[in-house]
Image (cartoon, rainbow, N blue to C red):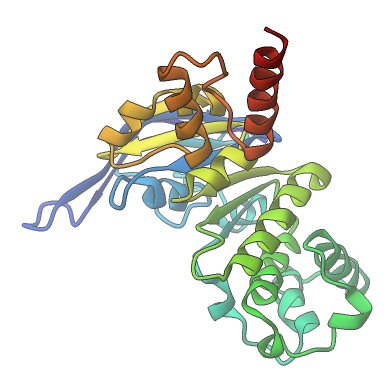
Amino acid sequence: MNIKLEKLSYIYNPETPFEKKALDEIDIEIDKNEFIGVIGHTGSGKSTFVQHLNGLIKPTSGKLTIDGKDITDKETKLTEVRQKVGLVFQYPEYQLFEETIYKDIAFGPENLKLDKDEVHRRVKKSMGLVGLDFEKMKDRSPFELSGGQKRRVAIAGVLAMEPKVLVLDEPTAGLDPSGRDEILEQIDRLYKEGNITIILVSHSMEDVAKLAGRVVVFSGGKIMFDGETREAFKHSKKLEELNLGVPQITKFMQKLKEKNIPVRDDVLTVEEAKIEVLKYLRGKAND
């Protein structure tokens, strides 16, 4: 599964006093089984970018191809594109409406006119992928669940369409700490076990650092950085200039490095920082 954007631009309200260029000739290629973190301040263009990926909006200019097919071509069937690229918006639980979890997750596959056995297989599989016990949960009302569980049901509904790419726009927004951790664990598990490309849009530098292998930074409708996650968070000053930042633990280690303490300044997690600090302390003890 390959997605390619070439010189793609998008303008809201063109030729009006409210005209705004949301994307400005961006070039990016996304390959199979990548985990990409998309970051940028509000209004940077990241949400407009992800809405292009399954044809919800079409570019004002430029080209977008999915597996070599131009999605702006009249012969391209957007229903097929949306089966390949699943998009989970912020607060997806607001879209739950059926009386049982099973029926809610089955809604999409049933609309594909699949037979009952195939629908059943997809519902059961997608519930497993997000960590919901099929037998215990399938007949429960989604409205009885916690916020984190509701969100997992909503994600399962998209997964039941069996997309090759899953786009998650702020998937932890509004959740309490336990619900947030629950969702992040399931996203990580889904990536590792689901043979799927994941694109995670997030304001949380910690979440992106922990999960993504590649980071794309948006600002003013342009891509300011696109590369390996460790490399992205080395540039803390540049990110701060863009009203972003780096994970707190990365910033802490960079401060230690500035004080001439010989530790790595590209760590992304507390676990990595612990290893570095212990290594330094053991070295001091042996001096």
